Amino acid sequence: MIPEVASPGIDISSPANSLPAQVSSKLSLSNSPSPAFPSSFASKDSRGQRGATAASAAKQLKPFATEDIKILLLENVNQTGRDILAAQGYQVDFLKTSLPEDELIQRIRNVHVIGIRSKTQLTARVLREAKNLIVIGCFCIGTNQVDTRYAAKHGIAVFNSPFSNSRSVAELVIAEIIALARQLGDRSNELHRGTWNKVSSGCWEIRGKTLGIIGYGHIGSQLSVLAEAMGMTVIFYDAVNLMALGTAKQVPTLDNLLQGADFITCHVPELPETSNMIGREQFEQMRKGSYLINASRGSVIDIPALIDAMRSGKLAGAALDVYPAEPGGNGDYFTNDLSHWIEDLRSLKNIILTPHIGGSTEEAQSAIGVEVSEALVRYVNEGATLGAVNMPEVNLRSLTMDEPNHVRVIYIHHNVPGVLRKVNEVLGDHNVDKQMTDSRGDVAYLMADISDVNASVIKDLYQHLESLSSRIMTRVLY
Image 1 (cartoon, rainbow, N blue to C red):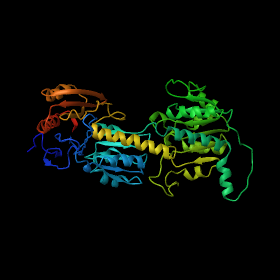
Image 2: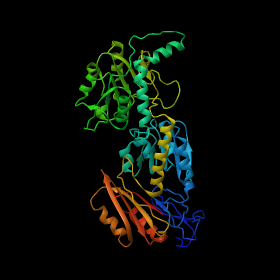
Image 3: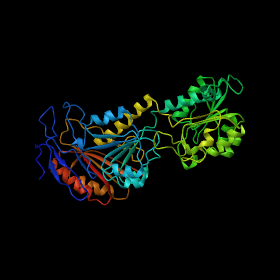
Image 4: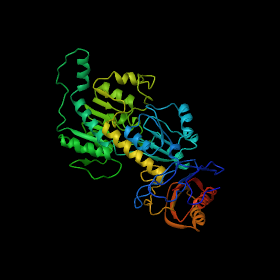
């Protein structure tokens, strides 16, 4: 039986076909005898606990019994992010590496939240086994390692941190431009082997040289400012017209950039249009003795064509931070077993090879940890989708402690005609204070705050929404 309003909080789990209730003695308000309500009814058994603040403060919505919210963090997610999640009372399981797919499937089955970086592949096969998963946090820029479309169709939101490591990547590229121009990598390696080789032939200042930036987004534009401050001329190519910073100039075609730059750097996403964007034809367009840098995605450069361009002298140097295939962890894995051309690549002169460390600074990883973890907490506790890459962006103002008998309903559903009518038939007998809905492709997201409810009303709302044919996932938060 569902307790009356003044009773302690209840723990209501939600398997697919039942909604049993268990009494929980852990849910209470610390500053007043205000009644406690069940705070989450999730179709994937999301559970948590909420505490209280002053009566006028914002009311932090949480799934109740938060010790049961299970989070799996892979690939050495930064401590700042781990601390934010642990402070919510969630069970946080942390690993420093990624996992092979079969082991990942075993580990993901019982978690509600998973946090990854760039190596973990969350394919449809993996996500199909994640029966309790409600949200994915990508502690990095890209989300191409996640099947975001499959996730959306199953009510799983995906968050990332698209801007937090922009400065770190831009600074690495500046360092590589200087290192390539002065052949610093070769001189350092020679001296490590005991060879003193003081030469100036083929070594240049970067002042007065032209930098060509492919992709003028957050990284490309910051790089533009840094390069100009060092006396370089900057041109850039982008698929859309953009306002240039400083005295940089946008060129109309990629060929214009390739023909006009001494240094070329790529900052584009992984898309079908950018696959092998720089290949044999593009290398032919480049100036003899020019330099190429790629810190975007490994699929952008045709590596065998790059090797030939280096060996022929067309390129004077190159720097790569990303590769078409990358090892799943640290170790002696960068060999031909990974890709057949790797030993040829390693044999080249004046080429800088780094292991995908563009965003690997303490500052960037700390900022990413904070941004993504806070987004995860907002989604788990309040249902806010601001910043989600695969869901409509929906948010309502926070409830306050002056609104103790309110509930937040979240209904993720297929974007088909007639859904709102049926949902509003369910909500129509209640006082809906706020409601917002939006759609993105085949998926729609509705959020509503309802006042003057008790535990039995909440259970009734949940069960009616769960019974609708359009349902993907239902969550009810207090």
